Image (cartoon, rainbow over all chains, first blue to last red; front, side, top):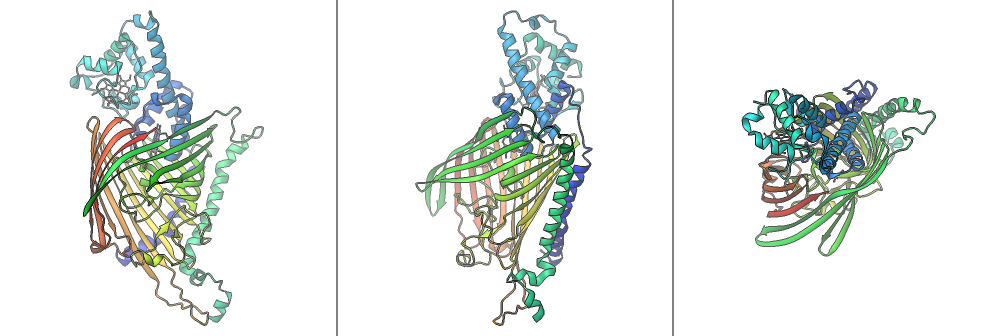
Length: 206
Length: 407
């Protein structure tokens, strides 16, 4: 290193730290950063899916919701909040998302055990599919209709890449083609899978 | 000059106010701003919590969780004759979460080396979530210098079965790290600002015990290779050899969800003669689909205490200040194809005892790896280290296979 570079580095060390602290203090005083609505549970868990999509695979592979109970996730997510410098709203949203996935997957499993689950009878429709996809937070991990997360591939145009049967099987059992998949198994009934497929077609899935 | 020496304490640094004292002044300034921002952060919480105990929800949920990771492996070292060994270790991590504001985390490490079971306290820290932006950490924590130590060192996270031989803790097979920093005792303030759409700024600033020199005060210093650079220790000794604390911080700019740049550094005295170690690090990561690029590099600058005592007790003001610089970097690329993930890493650094980062005394390592992922945190990893040392330090090539299991 040349002398000038050395002196630069040395003087940088004098102001870098105080200004870092100053920044921390300033940020704290003016915490007018992005804050999402926490009232609507679906909006919160969709925001959580988005945060999960962009931050939970940054340092390590994303860990699947099924690995832990809601209570365990709260402890683990606070651990990650400290380790990954997440904000409070980001951490709370991730917890809400993982809990909603756990709820959806267990509720779905219970419903399937009941012989005549009423949901099995609902006629498949794109509108119903949209409701289901929104509640499940698919857009947290996938782009659908131009918006969404990047953890999974975009679902716009997925029908051009994959045949309908593949998509049906993937939604019904995300690990069928990839045992490491972190995409949650929502245990949708066959009718619900049809609805979601119809929705994907309706948003320019082709 | 005489008058000056009359007032001088035995501590040499004070004679060179203008240079040596500067970091201390910075330290004082930091403490003032730190306390100020803490007060600012706490004010709203305290104001709204008159009737109950501040920071404790009425019926806080709490959870005790044991997580961590285990590793089991085999290595082949080619050093003239080959040598192969099995190894294993367990790193349990205890989490105790209390309400929304408190988390206690402590990680132990167990391994067996030459028939002796080693146990160490990797870190043990209290995380106090002050508000949505700020977290106060106290105890022994992973120092946010660069990113490897704090974010990537667990074996199920590091994609290669070996660490870049730059920093981390010693005592492992393979080349010794240049800067054995992993965790240290102290306090840290961490902050984060969400700028939306996966962008954000995060910062960490800390005061810790700082570096000490192994084998205290010069006896062993000369022994390792006869070089100028002493062997450092961090977080090993709770009795600070000098009263000066190490100050440091890291600023992370998440410019896009898949692109991050980190700048970090610290400054701390390592002897009681005003000798100081300054280190700067730049790290970056970029992800594109299932391809990931990472790299970090650092420079260490040593300022050795220059004050030579004369027989008459005076100190030579004009003594030449001895400085030295060392450093290193690594760059890594990996690509995930189904359960397979090939990795390549290139590390380049100065020799452990050389005082300059020059090519002739340098050392480089090319590492090839292949992982097979059974689950997001379980993988079988193979790695081949090709070491090229141009100094007296002979570093054998290594082939390592291990199972990493994060739980």
